[in-house]
Image (cartoon, rainbow over all chains, first blue to last red; front, side):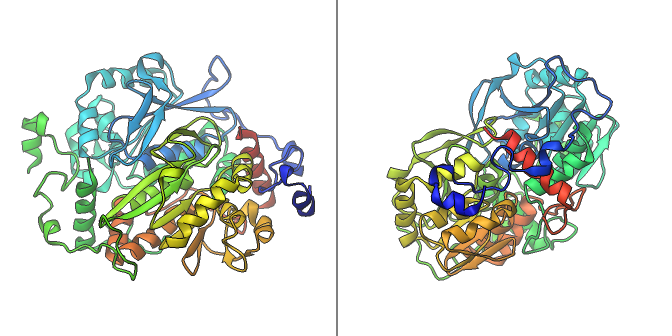
Length: 259
Length: 259
């Protein structure tokens, strides 16, 4: 499959190396892990990742883990909502589709609870039906995880008592209220519970999970697949690196954009 | 607003510092830029960011820029599709809602074209109606941008001839076919066109755009707001850092998961 060939035949254009069957070369012979760690494979042979969407969730909290887990061999990612259908994010400017309703999801190998703004997070912290669902999934899960303020939702469901955990930096003081101990880190593993820091930290946690669900080679390949070679133009990504004015402005922008 | 207060009154629970009106303190007095660079503000006083969604796009390509731009003061982000409604990503496991149809969007200050898999990208490279829409928006845009293989779509619309640009690493050889010169970088600025590297590079580009649309303080605050202090567990995020086996496996995982 040469570039010249693609030029002559637009209908068979190739824009991605390895995108056409057989074109990868060595790729076809590569052995990839499927559930290399200790857990048993589910009945259908796939590892099911359920990501909970709820009114007011933060899009990147959900999409970061999705994007690095969805191509791990044997993994199936499903967005789950109170009901199936469109779920609005915390800014009101974007909706993602929940493919399945909570009541129809009785098992997941991996549960991911994204964070949200003040309104969405507190609603989930007070929703006992959601807590019951989270606890039911957690009983048989291989990993139960959160991103950002999602840890406060896990905590409200009673899963973080006495455990080290992290959350969005602006919510660290509130971890104690659910019985958890704030612990620094992009993500914190405590038994089968993993909590990630704010928003973009879900990408780092996703790569860690990819290794746990498959193997390190697959996780490294997924890092390359999403070209995660970060080079932010600034270095203000944590409160330890940003000054007080930046911190106050970040909190203001979050509050002002919330619906 | 004390933690004790939140505990006594669950209905007014606070889970995010500064989330309640007046609680930010200094925040209320902070001046924030709205369109600090040279462009004229649009008629309604907002800067409109249009992100094109299409069947087979890559979710993080769109959600990365969205998440860092949606809270920039005065900015309104809109997802645009051929038609309004759910648009399926490249894995088929997730759909985002396009809020508006292309034909109803005649102006955008910032256009973002996300990348997609082989099928989605090539379909957009051959869709002349999309090219006409892109050129129409580009004529009056302040910034015309892409993430990942979105640059090949900009290129197919004729916008990259003779320009330096970047794209997903696995698609670099194909930039020449649209008349662009591959140039290394998380994002490459050429006049008012900015092309970002693969998938997660849209976050870095988004922060750069946030500064251009507002000011550096806002961009730095948005980096903190999404806690973008990356610390991937591996260092294989670019082909320069990954070995040949990782590269071949990444291309295989991308091909295998494509629908």
